[in-house]
Amino acid sequence: MALVDAVHRFTFEELAVRGALVQLQDVFQKTSEHAQYPEAIQSLLGQALCASALMSSTIKYDGRLTLQVQGQGALRLLLAQSTNSYGLRGMARYDGDLPAAASFAELTGKGRTLINIQADKHAQPWQGVIDTQYPSVAAMIEAYFGQSEQLDTKLILFSKAEQCFGLLLQKLPNENSDDADGWDRVCQLAETLTAEEALSLEAAEIVNRLFHEETVRVYEPHSAFFNCVGCADRVEAMLKQVDRAELDALVAETGQVEVTCEFCAKQFAYDAVDLASALASNAASASSRVQ
Image (cartoon, rainbow, N blue to C red; front, side, top):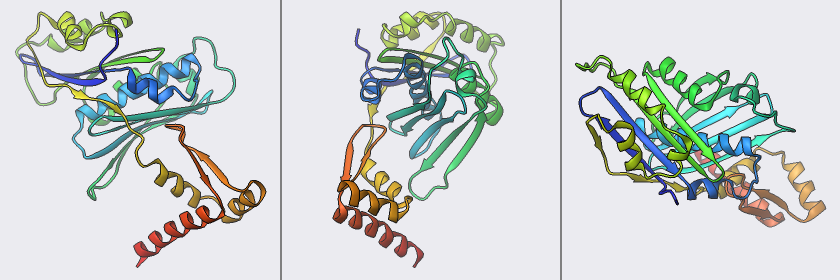
């Protein structure tokens, strides 16, 4: 069954617990269709996309949240980004052969993960950091919330082929519940979910199957979509960081500078005139900021 790309938020009426569920199919396909990632990398990318969407569902901001894993093992970079309206994109870089059945920690080595929130409307950017020495993406995000936000968090992530799924539960702070075992109970129920169920059933049916004995309020879902708007500006910003002599030499040799967006595979070509215009516009912008 085709999944509906959406984020579903819900709360437990009689417990101090909130939840969110995300299912992605079209978004995941558009994210990875141009890259032909190995199965292990494809799976981690799907998990990271779901994790970024679920984190966005718990934080109020107007901009974009980026989950960036910087590895020192076979996985060199894993990046997933979500806007506050669930516009998603992601990519991965890896080197050499991937170890069979390796854990997340083994694939990344002694890396680190940056969680950035770049808010619009002149708000200050925010960044959190956690290491990658965890068996899975889910375990890493759970530890991050526990260490940085002091929030008990349960995260379930599944990814297979071109479908991915995430379920997040959080125990709300400073809220009391008469049900002392409620948090442990809903976490145990979440752990009974199988990948087959998560990647085939509708979101409402999953919530009902898992928590049918609880009183759950489910809110209107938010559509998720593939988003790579503004990559031309980012390419030009990248060109500005390259030595001008190197760019000029490349144009002299091949006639143009070619750049491909790693998120959407869109190709950009700059001949001598295009390159001069792009760099001049960047320079003019920088000059106006200095003034």
